[in-house]
Length: 449
Image 1 (cartoon, rainbow, N blue to C red):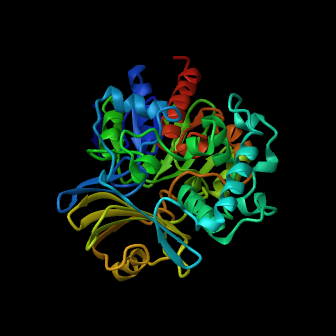
Image 2: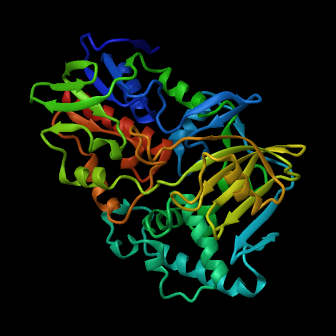
Image 3: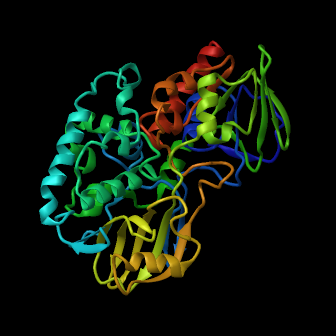
């Protein structure tokens, strides 16, 4: 079991920089191999960008960061942890759900995402996306394939399609929700790769959920006891020491060891796992310097910069799933994850960076009223991940050009290895678990253990 210490003194084999899922996974593997590990975390808490807080509002848990558990086929490591530790799931609002669509300045409800006279346009879009995804071999690593023509923003890829305005707006809302940024920022390649692997557009969009509700089928389940339960399960297998509130400033590989300079002093260890988000790496001085590929990733950061908001609401008569691009800015997607009577918990993803003042309950209430007239906001929970100096991004999503350089960027440099969801196509906690394991194995090789 890990223990929290208040200083850097001690004789350690490995320093793990960053106490998120990747750092916890690496420390678990390394301590099980008999190594003495110190996790250095800049925040006053662990778990990184998946952070839950129980009993936040009237007994309900709030998820400040990533929360939804994606499909088993694509995220096997995550589900292995869930199954091994017997973690319970919640599938959101399970009653009949109202589907709400907002495009062209109009609000519609029902199963059709576009007006009936645009169904041909929607079919054109789906056929085009399917054809693009068919260029990808799902059985080969994506970075080994010559698909650079797909590694561009969606507006560029769809420029020649004569799409109807509602079709275009609603697909834009889908990309904004998926990538956490305006749809002209992220690369189209990650979604096309997912479609290729799943075999269809619907397979990459809808989950095989036990409940046929929009939230369950499109966002997947959440953990009943919060993502903190998953993090605690991973870290429970580690005997590492943990120091909190300590920021790393310099990492110097001397050839025989690694000197780590921090705001609480220096420590020298035989090897290091850097599990820092790529947007944070640029603020740490590495000697020798980072590879050119990693410097590029660090300078660019992740695409996802928009906000996720959890709103505790009243005057919400039915569970709902809403999708669109509000003309004056607001939520690209908003969905009830809990509903009882006329009260609900709504999770919303903003339509663009700065599109909504998420600190203002009145502004959030007005944005939600575009979808549900009369809804009122009782409390809000959100975290500025893009402005967080220890995150510099909401979640991991790729910009154009990053897919090709990411594997080289993650390669070990001397006695320093790298881990984190930002390095891996699996994204989210799956990427963190995978790369945390890879980095730990690299350390064992470095130390001949």
